[in-house]
Length: 333
Image (tube, rainbow, N blue to C red; front, side, top):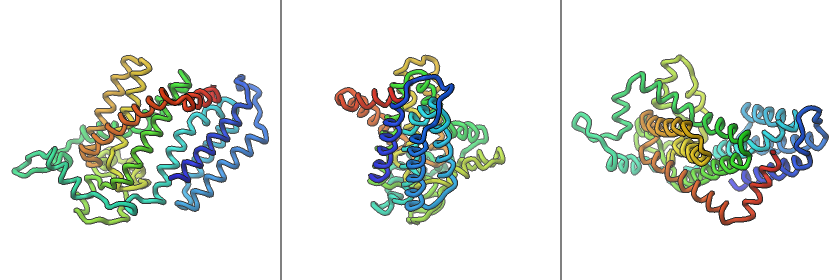
């Protein structure tokens, strides 16, 4: 993890320093110099080499490098855009590299204990037996709810990215704060993953309480969405899962809450109703599809709140950090 963060810091230092050498002019006539080529080559080459050493070669890596290089070299405007969104690239790299350091290698995986806690706190009497909400929905699902939950779950990445793009063009300082909060909440969540490895509900439905280290990702209840539309959207997504035993906290539940907070902070009015609806929809879908326990969702909400409040406190009390945000915003303005 430290190696990945070092790489991320190196990336930001190189790109920010390089970008400040260029005035905020129109895109017309902007030229790419040898310095941009060198920076893009160093970052791309370093990322591909490190990725190969840690997790092996994947076509996704080439896709990421191609997008980054194309935007970084195309023009001054696109360079600033990808430098701004590099925060999300750092997040993705950290998430992807977790494959090299599975959390179950550091701590015992919680399977039965988490299930029992969910049953004790949120159990439902169904046909004379106490079951978890996941088990209840497994036995009582419907097509229209499957479709709605699938649509809500598809929002977990596009909504934060679309909101980030909106802030990028509206207010670069707020964009940086939102993006860094997003990254910070994820890092907090990743830390908990390693301190408290936890199996998702579908794991115990398929494998019981025994631990199997190399269990592949599973679409669980989202398979019904894929089956209805005859697609493989969620099957493709969960085939690339970095770690099956990372259910607690539910970061799917954290993301829309971060968006909602910054939506309210930026006074977006009725749009915030959409963000709140998406948040509640994702929270319900996480449980309905057996990807998370209610406890996981609550932990995701807590992690988001802790991350947001901690970030705001850091900005308020640390002058150097405020200067960094200002420096970052200036470099992409």
